[in-house]
Length: 173
Image (tube, rainbow, N blue to C red; front, top):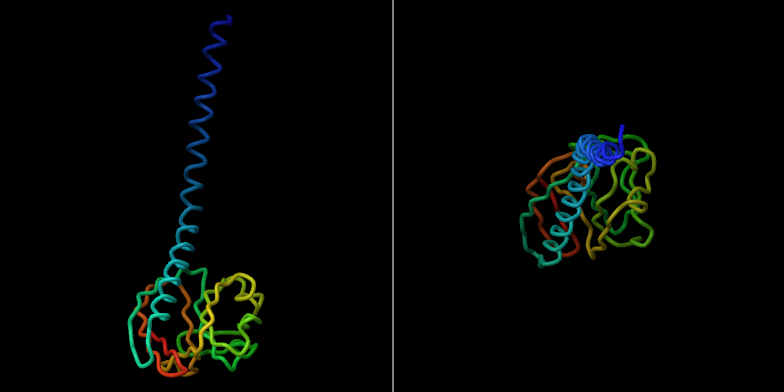
């Protein structure tokens, strides 16, 4: 092959390699990007929920649409309890829970936490390790749940009914 042929072949080969890489990388990115979008969506919706709660006066009620991805749980803690669950899988309303510890810096405070559900399978401190928790001046309960615990899990969109009265924030679907 002559020099002119070799000079033309290099850019053509580079172009072919780039095209092949695009066909390999783009489908992979299509699988990776939705995971980041869901995390951001769940975190953004959590921030909106916290804003809704912050603006809720005593004796007032509001509704908030909350979308949660499969990767998270949303859990409320009472001021007097530093964990939820028993250490053994306990059925409580629509969910089963083993044990979830409240972060140490929220001891004796109410809290609402968005936690990594995958970590809870192996570590009760999932909310401390990979969680976003908001301190509240009141207990967080679910008066429609037989255990009184507010917890959302599983990929879903829920219209949450939220009522604040004195030292209690009652959240339920």
